[in-house]
Image (cartoon, rainbow, N blue to C red; front, side):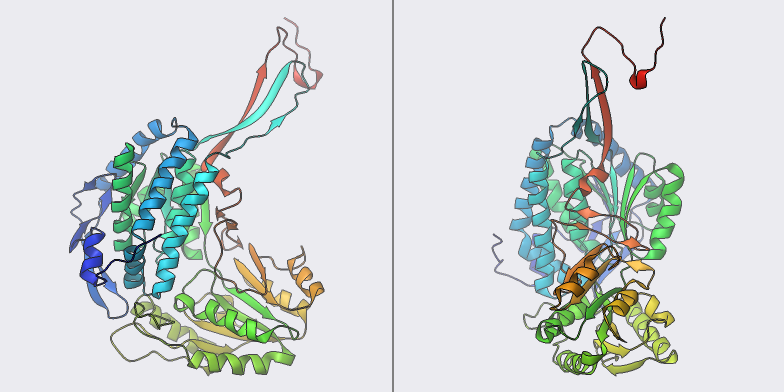
Amino acid sequence: MSVPSADHSVAAVLHRLGIHAVNHGAGTGRWIETKGAELVSKNPATNEPIAAVRQASAADYEAVAAEAARAFETWRMVPAPKRGEVVRLLGNALRAHKDDLGRLVSLENGKILSEGLGEVQEMIDICDFALGLSRQLYGMTMPSERPLHRMYEQWQPLGPVGVVSAFNFPVAVWAWNAAIAAVCGDPVIWKPSSKVPLAAVAVQNICDRVMADAGFPGIFNLVIGPREVGERLLTDRRVPLISATGSCRMGKRIAELVGPRFGRTILELGGNNAIIVLEDADLDLAVRAVTFAAVGTAGQRCTTPRRLVVQKGVARTMVARLCGTYKSIRIGDPLLPDTLMGPLIDAGAVDEMMKALEQAKAEGGEVVCGGKRLDGPGNFVEPTLVRARPEMKIVQEETFAPVLYVIEVADVDEAILVNNGVPQGLSSAIFTRDLLAAEKFLSAAGSDCGIANVNIGTSGAEIGGAFGGEKDTGGGREAGSDSWKMYMRRQTVTINYSKELPLAQGVRFEV
């Protein structure tokens, strides 16, 4: 369990996490003295500076990549259960730092404290998951048609894995990849979002201590730098897999760079998720679930619902109840215990939300509650409901903000068409007491998303299931189930333990 620290001041939290006024931007178990331009991290609740990072150069990236490649030669030969033991130690270190790291996530990202702490808990959970996985990297045995032959498949470490993470989950998505990659025998090169670099520096400090004690430096590596550094990672043939979280536009660029070298990608891109509420739904449950899903993280989760698809008989009631709930949302300092919604990540995100609302109105949409930026130094907005039609251009796009488009439908069949009628396909949900409607939603003719929920919202995925989506969401899968196979290479093995050499398919070749 995490023991809360006595002093919760920003200065004390930063000190305990090893964050200085200016920090290095590259590490491989030891910090590299980067000399690039300063990247200043700001508190989105006040827009005041927290601390800075000196960004890495191309030469710094080369040093990081070379160390990861070197570490792979040793790490791949460490038995997987031993690798799992090291990841267990990392999980324990995260437990010890949960309170401070969760507070830093909230400070730098703007999500409320319980969500910041929950994100660190995800890191701990995936370390536990990876520990068990380290003894379950199974390959199948299959019968050979040739006598006295044995066939099986085995999974081998793949190589250094590049992880490109987004601002909305500054540390959890890295952990989903890093913990699994590590037990699979792969070092990790992490390029975090430039909007939240301090959380990455704090995690690197924790990793460095754990790996130094274990005697395996160079397994968890960090590089914070401009676009040039990111593109070097994407085009580096020493890095056979890139796992990236971000926008659809970013994902297309990554595919363009990684594809020509035949590298693998795990792409977690745009969501534009929908929640369906049918007339027989438990509206108390639906209102609570929709509010958390749409307002949590200030609408900046990949799984945040952007569309509320409501059957006409309950549409008026659902909208009225949501508006009442939205008006009660406590917006403010995310570190205060009673706050339910913090700020957007930066002023640009606020501008994008306002532009989206103007476009929605221009296309015939109606703002029914919210829709304003709030006065003050931070990037605060009101959570917003907009009556809309599914064919509106703005509804087809994902606005990364607490904007929820309300769309009325006649029945479950129309609701499923609307759910599937966008380019993205990450998460989806339906609220109903009708077993037939729920099963239709979950059938092959139902939701086309990677995640489909019944009577819960679209967000809050657990690490035990594979996380990811279809269509423009990228098709990648992270965390649970058999997603570990992306971090390894499959090898089919045939052993002849006879003195003969029979050929498959009855082929004869006498010499």
